[in-house]
Length: 173
Image (tube, rainbow, N blue to C red):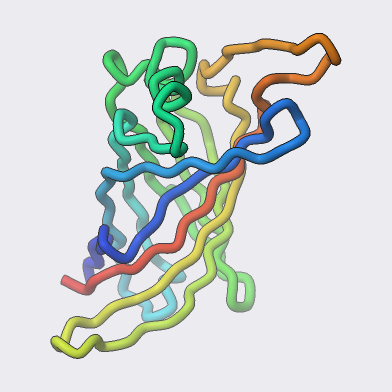
């Protein structure tokens, strides 16, 4: 069984939320760790494990980042980590359907991610690398991120649906 570690300098883990239902705000986690264990070269038998430091959330706005770290959203002081662990993987052509459990604020819920394997290559220093792209979505309220404000026009300040995305580079251990 091969173990693959996330390469943080070549990986981006992010999310998108609708703001006032008229624009999209993007965010990312700057600090994270993860690994994949797999025997198959196409990762069809893989086990995925990931964690992000919630306090590293970055939306390019310090006030918004502070609010996201507060008890209204992630409550980073009480729940410093967001985690995901896969429970099964299904291969569908070039796409993997990764099913797992995400934990945010101590609440565990099933999550489905679609994963594209971009390929495997050896870098100039002899390291075997793999590239993956994932997408998915969660309902933030399912995880206790229930902050709710409606403006005078009746629009939600923040959408309930949060889209997940990542461009991941792995290094074979």
